[in-house]
Image (cartoon, rainbow, N blue to C red; front, side, top):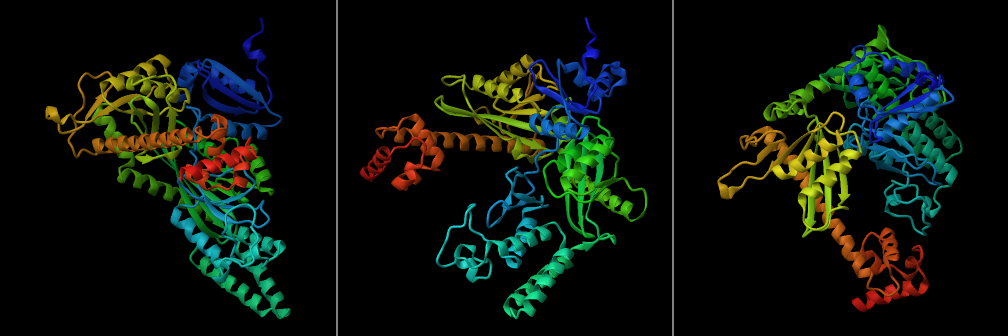
Length: 597
């Protein structure tokens, strides 16, 4: 019988620890899988606390061989994003930070604001520190470069251009006022501007202005001159922080208990053009481990990679990360941890910013509030990640469940979930809330605390599900029940598992008010989702009254058109474009709604 260790491969690759349900607990990569995995076989006293917990819960192990360490690094980051493992440091999608999306794959690209970076062939710039910052940048670009504003991938031909052309905010490719090649030159200028390469951009514009003047095209030369002035005015508002005039990202860390703040300073051509901060929950990782995890996930999004990245803390896997980033940037990238000089000053600036962000979170109560919840409810952990569960149904029909998530006092929309109740018939709130809890637990990456909208019965239903599943690092469950004014109660009650009596806080207690705010948010979402489902159900039932329309055709119509009103007003030609639709059925739909009028 061969030794299990002997079966492990010695090449580079990725390994996944899983629990008894097959859920991924941890994703790691290694240059030598056998050597790395043997390290987990050491006595638990020699392992970190986090690793010991993970090994105790791990019941399965998968590994994937790769051709190189660089490929393993890319695969590791992809799998972490896909599975959100409990024991990995996970950089949440920064959906609160808007980006600018440039549709470079279109013949006439347009610029728009996006909340999520997709792999769709477009170029993404950002994320920006606020919605105001991205709108201001878009306003400058609209004025200086005059890209088209009309939506859609294709430009619809027009005899007369729209009002934006008259206002000097668009070159009107729709009316043939500019060729695709001329427009593409302007798009390249926009890319230079958004990458912060303003010196290069101004030099190019100066050449174009001089050429236009030599060819006696004075109107075009004047327009380019105005472009140059507008760009120079924008540069004046930026701060010179480096005399080297390089493109750099400077990354600094600040640490609190179980909590890191990472600040990224983006320096382009010596100018500081943006500063962004990220909050990361940790379980005993060192600053070096946090820095490495952050870099892998931050640059995996596909944004601009500068030639030089300065760090406050070293990373163990520097060689393969550097190789990977150089390939992404299509030029040599260097990663440094400077000890002195101007580069160290920039790193200290990033660290100082991270410490200020951390201090603000502590002073503003984002961190202190979680500690207050722990103390007020006598919980075993500090609940920084809270998710609330609620049910909405109409006499048991079309029942739905929703979950909202809050991290460090703020709503995190990436944690919001909607569920259609599938296994419960009739009115049974306990069974419905248990189903939602069970499906949420199966998704992994659980919160520190589940907040249930209800009383002792609802709490017991969720507690039973958690006990049955033996979830890793099991969340605490509390329920928030409304005051019964008929019994003389004046404040909502908080039921905590394994405690007989509810916790009664003062009406103006910040902990109670915060929990009520979360409950109101999940209730609002549950009601909204239920109304949406009801509207869809009513719409489908109306369509099913039309001869020749079955459930499949009704579903395709609702996928093609956003509402019943749009179907009513659609032309026969538009209806025929719906998959599986014949001319006769499309005409029948038109007659049905005309008679209904």
